[in-house]
Length: 240
Image (cartoon, rainbow, N blue to C red; front, top):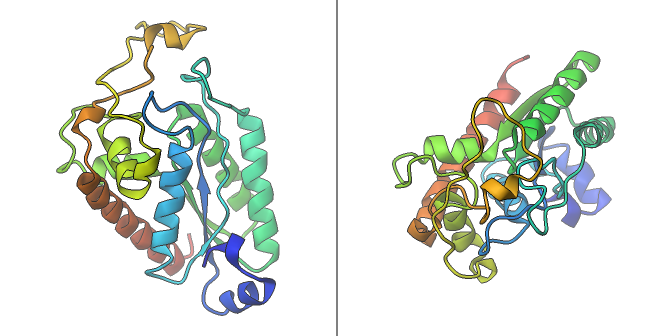
């Protein structure tokens, strides 16, 4: 049940089927010279929509912005603060809760460390405040890389590499502009912070997009969708 496509009557009827909702979080962030800035949002939203075909599940409109530190100097990246991100999640959950939903799956396609921690912090605050809320905060990329380990050939593949390029080749091939190049960042060690991370990561790729195929993307996405369906059922089954 895709919320942005529903009428209020359909939404009310949906509450008779489920009290669970998946909220996709993404980003507007560089993904090399070959993938769209919306890559993270596309992946999370696609998984949510496909999961809703398997089980009763509301899927909220995606939040397109995230906190992006490592890519902030790369062209096209639009970052928001972690405080804004936390407020967005809290406000969305509180509003959905007021309509009768109480099981919340936050699926983030953006895997930045501060971004993920902000969502986790907001989730912890919400379950502390509302006794009837159940929440899960899941990083879509972690599911893809862990569960799809037998499919991915590139060791340490991450941002805009084999995994993400395969995913977009499968779902949105018209948005893939070329093949990209193999690259890994060369950030300084020892905890040193640098202002311009692009200096150490020129192309914005973390992995090997040349090994990507649409078939790999299909297989990885199917695995991720299955894991999300399992998670929804588990969240619904217990009083966490």
